[in-house]
Image (cartoon, rainbow, N blue to C red; front, side):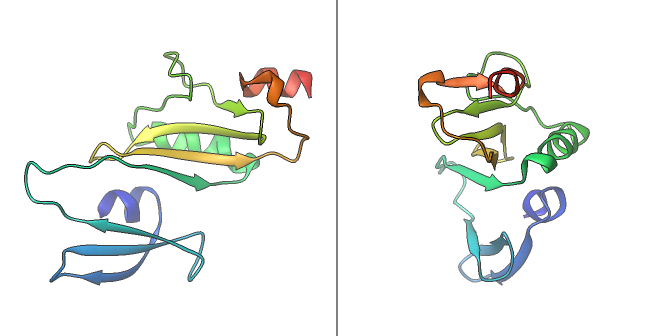
Length: 130
């Protein structure tokens, strides 16, 4: 819970201690919700969750993750921390794990026209060719 509230800044909507579940607002009150259930020891699940940020917030968000010691990686998992653009949308994104091993993504929609033929390219390359 500390990861989602303290590090990611999500607001706790409701905590139900009997069921061991916490609900967080994503994007503001009553917009979207993330539910976290505590699992018994040894029982795991893996999820992918994407959180929208603006393209102007992306660099600050990446630095925030670095400042908190999180391992960030891109869609290509090429060993770099370079944000990548999914050109079919288009949107720029970066990935990082939560403490339970779920894959989290920060994604920023871009105002440009989709270019699906380009596949996934670095944000730097996208800026050059758009």
